[in-house]
Image (tube, rainbow, N blue to C red; front, side, top):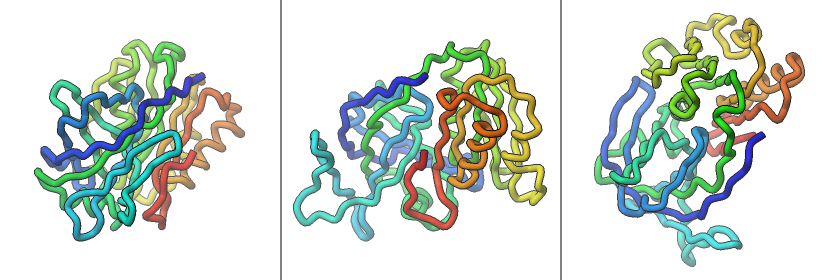
Length: 260
């Protein structure tokens, strides 16, 4: 069972420090600034809200937070906000690293594609974390697509080396694969969506596996997530309290927040 822990919520104004291409469709942006003091992200799948400047502006309008929620200055245009998983953060160096999948023409993808050192952006959160015990399960099942790569990488860093970790990742093509952290118990298979083979989907792959139970974590496109969740719950009888599933994006929608 996970325990939901809430964190003090504040918006931070950060600056782009560096930009790196991890693959043709994955861009790593490292943000930094003194406002990262006090930032917390204890779990691999935490997410922050990226607060983007309005079109034609260089600075985002940042809210203040209270028990009543977010408050913006009178007359201000609220920033476009999108959810992202922190790939890494370093409080001593005051840096926060986010990875962006460059797919479609949504506002966050558009911003990430043109971001350069010196640009400024807002970050709020994480608001809460679903805290788990890394030693609670001998086996962990991680299923995701490109958007889940930051969280999967953090899971591999977070889980004990003696744990068995089954990871299946669906990406567009072979060049979209990236180097993941080493883990002694890792069983990793990459699936290539653009091969157009029916057996290369996450659902087809998971149906072939002999799974020993444990904790299952799923993050991918919303419809795909629902199919994987249904398979585990209905066809395999997976305990609901040992499964977490999130739709990180929705095909055809540019304003989709995480779906659980």
